[in-house]
Length: 489
Image (tube, rainbow, N blue to C red; front, side):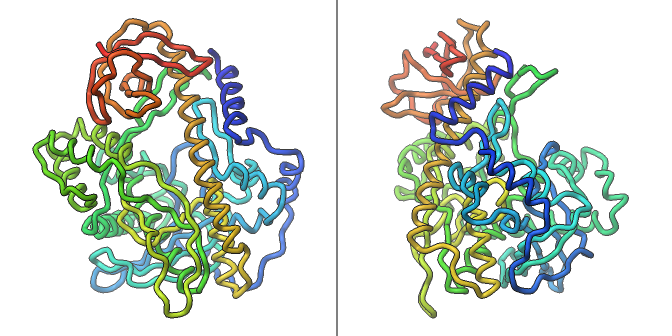
């Protein structure tokens, strides 16, 4: 199978799952027209272009959604600012571009390439926070105390300039002391201080969440590797220190965003993760390592177990993380109604894995529609304008975004399995070490590590459950149908 066939398979998978693989001509024209200056909405826009803003992302990322900068305060506290690209300025509600984004709700990342939520003239250019380019942004400002608590926050609009586009691998290796400093540190005054302050802040924020039960998992995902345009492997893509750093900052910003909308009397879209339905299986996994977890879901106890296993068995922690993540289940979106003045915020809106009660996706509006919706709510609140969405509309958006996120994940897995089937077509009969990633009436699934991919166990699956390890033999593959079949060896 060549990359063109893989791309066509991805297109067909998108259509089958109710996702739009291509933009309508009107949407593409709107994106081009957005190059012309759009009228700005009312409200003050601060000038923060002088600050040492920077981004950290993948080496090949062009759709830069957020920047950050920090300032040390007395007693170990710090002022942290996260600037999120003002995508709403270039994407009008009800436009053809907005309609495409509302339909798909997310960018879809497949082994055949990316199907962006917004036309690339927007996401990779006009609404991307490129280095040395002046951009409008929505800024979440937080005061972080030495113990990691966010003691205060505000949200406002500003003009910003990205002073340095950094990469996860480069920053992580430098922080770990295994590589030289990124070249931008020599050319941008104060950047080294910013990175070290950010590293400290992220650690403080993470430790505070972990005292409340935030789960410190580190599952590996599969990354397609191409040489001369041909797929040659699927390799583990494991999180590193810089990825954790950015994740910690975004979690804090998303929490501050949710609280700001509550304070302004606005409804919001929340990201939820309920307590795991398969907690009994997590208890059994812990018991296999000599640890007794409570009978009822307890995030703090689970995180203590995970941290102990990370130290005891670093090599096996990715597999354990994968099993726990599978058993935790998928997140979902929900609409939180506006709270009356003085009334408590909506309950049941927490995130089990992050150990936070108020959480609204807001930091990736180029890639996720819920973040764009949240941005419009924020800008309306800042400007004192009417609600851009009714409560009923937000409920419908939440339901649709959850559905389409699941469909996008299924497309990504299908294309990845097709790519994996092509890589394995000459290895029928080989035996692999595997971990069970799914056990349900629809089938039992395992993941092998080289190449990193999942397949179905069609014989000998009896008694296997998520987190078990097994030896499996490759029986058959079908790249066109995305089938990879194993039997227990």
